[in-house]
Image (cartoon, rainbow, N blue to C red):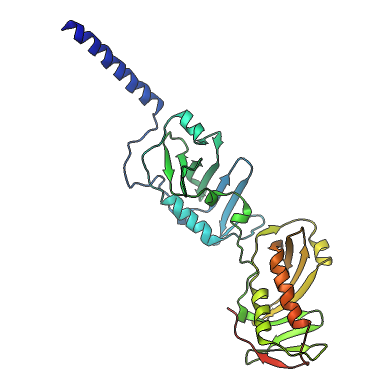
Length: 315
């Protein structure tokens, strides 16, 4: 009997020692409670977001209800995208931990000094969330850890949603206009103008070719629908404007006039400067090629001066 008791006591002591050891290594571990939020934040209270990776850092700030890249340059980002992102972070639920040790944090790239993305959200100067994001175990999944804790969980979030690259967040619709808001387009000495009945006419022209309704609609679509993929803030602005490859002006129905100047920069990109925007906006070359083609279709074959044609409204 004594021979059985001694091994049992030794085994019990080993188990107690193991439990104490694990507990000492996981002081921050909390029992798993299903359907509870990982971080308790109100998305509407957030006014600053910082996303860092090994190579870059993105800072977003909310000013008067609009999210911008920084308080200094106030370049607008996609506010709807930012709000959706905040809702996603606020909605992350606590799940079973996939790791709790320092080695696991390093291996899954969610440690303080080895991570893929570090997210800090603040509101009114108060830190609302501090999260480390790491490797992806599957489609639209990512490992994460709350700063100051040991638990590593898996969240339903795609890695690209955490990108600190400006191009992923900038408002791509900054140059877009409502088609029916355009009253007049001026290119060199030619002027395309909308009549009171919403038809269009060339009030200045050099020849007597017929004005085609479909071609007008195509031009309005290209002029009103330019999509942005980046921005430029540098000392070359005036030089680029002076050497513009394409220049035209738009007058809106409200009377506001916008001057646009396009300069190719690189093989597949143009920089656009618009008179009401302080910085340059990057636009893909294929868009400018389509725009130039539409311009040539109208202004390269103009009708008699004053001749008009009805055109459908471009939305």
